[in-house]
Image 1 (tube, protein in one colour):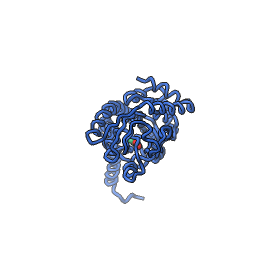
Image 2 (cartoon, helix red, strand yellow; image 1 turned 120 degrees about the vertical axis):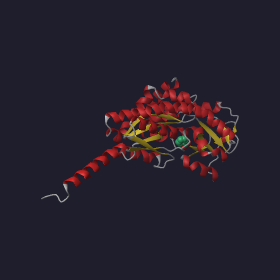
Image 3 (cartoon, helix red, strand yellow; image 1 turned 90 degrees about the horizontal axis):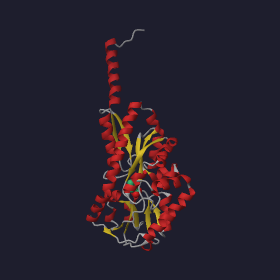
Length: 327
Ligand code: BEZ
């Protein structure tokens, strides 16, 4: 039977579809989710990945960044990465270690001297191996992000662990944090970042384990002003791409994406190191009161907790040895 639509109209429609298809490709927008506020260094790294990718792809691939858990919790984001519903994310190592316990190595107390030392550990063989281990969870581990070291913010003054005895300390929801704060004699209270401000307002919390980047962004020092620079842990993130999404890209697209992430990752290291100093100046100017603290008892307890993990997990032992001497 003769097609009732004239041939010329059909050709025009086909051309339009073709343009739409090219247009769709020309406007491929990769969603990237993370949990930090837009002032945080990981948000800046995410934007940098987007800039790099746009320029390398001549505008064909761009990134839409969603901060502050707008796409859901990190657990939910990992499910979305596995299904391919979310192409990219920057995830804190805490929830990643629920899937791959070796990532708990990043949170061992008093393993790292400072942010620079932690960034040096990102290129050790063991940490690169750990990225590869994410494949079986539907994620391609592309690299690491760094925030400031963890410190303590408290509504009361602090000079030693005794001042925190039985105090409700907000901890990052992860076993290493819980073990460390329990060993210090406090009552660790696991809460996500989004629930810290209400926790301080309602006196559910007496103190908070936090990095300075998040502190500057969330201004918790306006609720609990005493800041003890305990420097007890590093706080890395993992930059991941959905394996399902990655497998659907061609070689050229994969290279553009991998290079864009690598360049942003390295840029982020320097940003994190310099942010530690500038964030400290910002919070002190904004009213945070620096505490005089004897760090020896914190360090001694932290090292014991670290040991309890290295003896239980051979991979964490390997991590500890390589990270300790990383330069
Ligand atoms: C936190 O829960 O303390 C946190 C999470 C992401 C980035 C920084 C801090």
